[in-house]
Image (cartoon, rainbow, N blue to C red):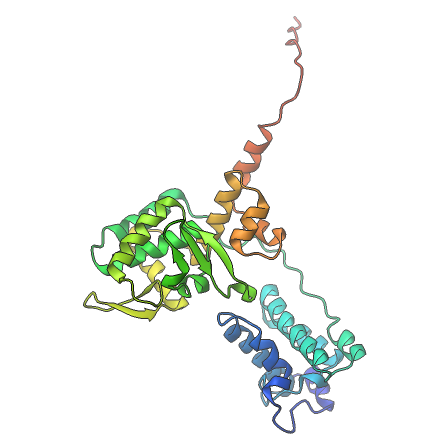
Length: 327
């Protein structure tokens, strides 16, 4: 164990007795997260706990209220040596949020809290992640699903149409139920999205037929909108996982040579295309389920061509006679 970390353990950090979950800052913090975010952030808290106690504690056995600035500063310094800035910042965010719960639960006083969380994020200078999918790439992905006459082909086509047409997250698309869809106006009710917020998104008319074809095969029984299809082609009303969505897209992409893309790239494409069509960023923000327009702007992948075309709309008044050539 590093000497710097060992020095932080002068004050015991392991809980001496189990704490009720309703009074445990890490448990309270994790309970506020969506089901999609919870496992990732618990792993982050477990990693921090092991780092501070030489592998003795996890998130639920560490005494978070005993952490002070020397602990949090050591965590930051150690993580920087081993991980990318984005990963370090995610870990620090989880750390601050747990300490905030310790303050709210009156397990930590305000002065110790303020000092402990006074650790800056690591500056990230990397280029924007992900990309926007080209129109032909999306068409190819749809076509390979159309060429599959089995129920799996119909389901996968509906999946791509929903991701492309509504910009929902992977965790959100698998949580859609049949009752969340209104065919009359193409509305999809997204429940407990990121941050636990509900919102309504809409499918374009071009996606409604694709989704309707799948639902005619799925049937009208209550349950998940997108579900499993077994090897015999029978629809099983069991919810897809986020990992299953990843595998489906990878498989269809490999079939048509569309590579290096993710489900989240459909979301980036959705946002970029709406902005490119002239929709105001406030509307796009609400459709995307972002808390601020700054978040929406970070998804913009329109590139340099859009900026070049934008300035062509400006005019410079007046004109000048062409200068005569001097002999």
